[in-house]
Length: 174
Ligand SMILES: [Zn+2]
Image (cartoon, rainbow, N blue to C red; front, side):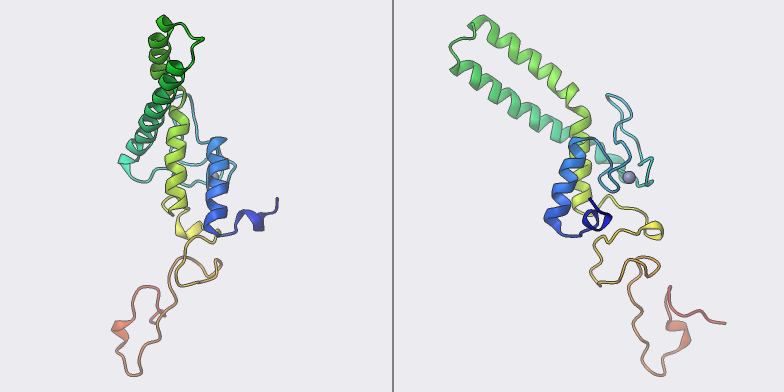
């Protein structure tokens, strides 16, 4: 798979690629660095491309929310299946649901946070810093990725505008 395919900026492609990388606990930006540092810890940034996975301090609650939702849905599905399946002894039903409800969120912890990081990535919130960003992330003004950063093209000054009106990124004054 060539690099040009991985950098295709179509939303559907980015979502599919992100989902595949999240399942494998890989960095959603470069696909190389591992997300998980242990069973219950994630790396703060990618060891391969250096991107910060969760830029805001409260992002961990997003992963916990994913985990709670998945656990609740799993408990409902398991309870329904145990209720409908006549082969399972009724005395085992409650212990099975309890074991699932305790074990699943622990086993799913890394993936739940990875899913949240994937959601952040698809919505453009996990990205390299602009100075070192060769990937064509969302740039509404359509600048090419090698223009030296994320600054929009300079608006030409009207004739006779004072030099003090030149903003950051404009032509250097002597
Ligand atoms: Zn990476």
